[in-house]
Length: 353
Image (cartoon, rainbow, N blue to C red; front, top):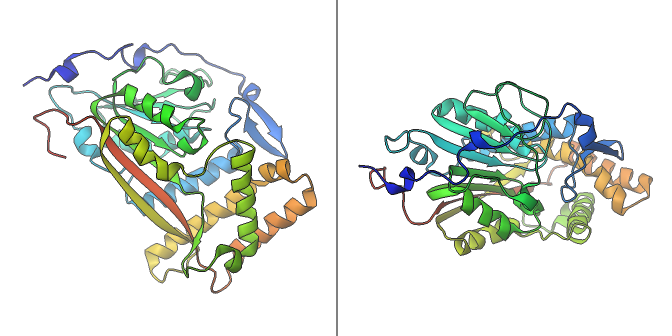
């Protein structure tokens, strides 16, 4: 039995109909600040875009995959099932500062192998492409000329996702919402590109650190507390961004017509102190992620604290804490996963969600 939802072509056609641009002058998209490389287009993203930061993202991806248990949450296999009504499905990965490309290099590429009938599209601001992607992966970002993928560069927040109205079955967006001027506009754009019954997956780190003991962070790890509060204050005051994105997203999704909104909070140890092998492995990976993150925040600290010696002492103090993790210091970071469906239901013949 056919369904009119999938008989109607998406506005603007498919991802293949997008206009593409190429750039062989990758250096023109970057600037150096305080010894690190930054992307020139994204004033709201406060962290570098260079090899060290990409290595940190790679480590973080591996750690979060262990925490969540796989590359996605929710009923993705049901949503992406190869059905006679519409045999080709599409997934859009929305990122910021190479996050989409990084995930296409990792989780989305793995998913592309799991779902060979699914067309994966990556949208980002950064002109850097992953290694040879599968045939069902399309990268919409400016980069060097390639024959096996399309590339487009634009400001996602300003321009939206071009020409893809009601064309996507799944939209994945991780670590981008916090650094958007309008989280509501982002969710509205996600709703626009999703087909009725499509699925959104969001992932955001909470910008707060707790202790397993319940003690005040300032008492248990004063250097860490001072460093982290400086980062939070810089994001709030200099960038004008709020720090409650993970908590606000479920309500915004509801306001934009999403249903079956499912939220999970993951408390992640920083360091191998949990007492069980898997927890210790996750904690050790997370400790390495935070060690690299401390380095990535140095330019931001220098913007708000011009005294380089003070900044370097603060960074060194936090790194020493994370490297040694004295007995009794048990820190936890928190990761939020959220998935939801656009509208009420999908095809009547599909498996019940």
